[in-house]
Image 1: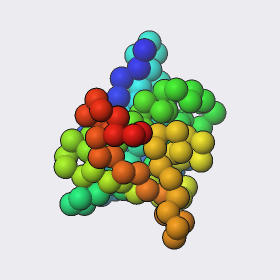
Image 2: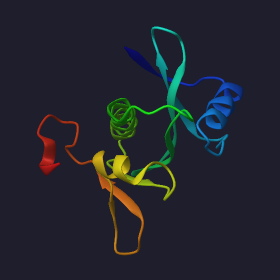
Image 3: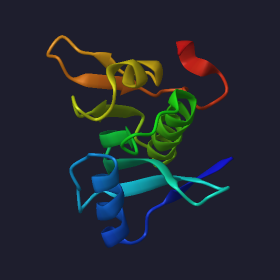
Length: 130
């Protein structure tokens, strides 16, 4: 079992970013995914919400840790929070996550090469074609 939680302390967010091999984004929101059995960090997300869209900077597992399904859940939890805040579209940094993971959670490359996800009805139970 694991728990996904908002990171409240920027020093902890910085430590988690380093543990995941990611750049620390101090002005972003952060989510951690912690193993409930041993308290170990499994992965983290850093993201922002700006009006009608969100932006994922980081969606990474801890270095030397791999659990695709858990990372999928962290990615979708991050996107769901962004959607609940009223931003129904989301972009991601090109190096935010592994290409397989970022595509699995719903991102596609636009003609200009940006990673984009339309989250309209993604979390409404209707699936909206997703």
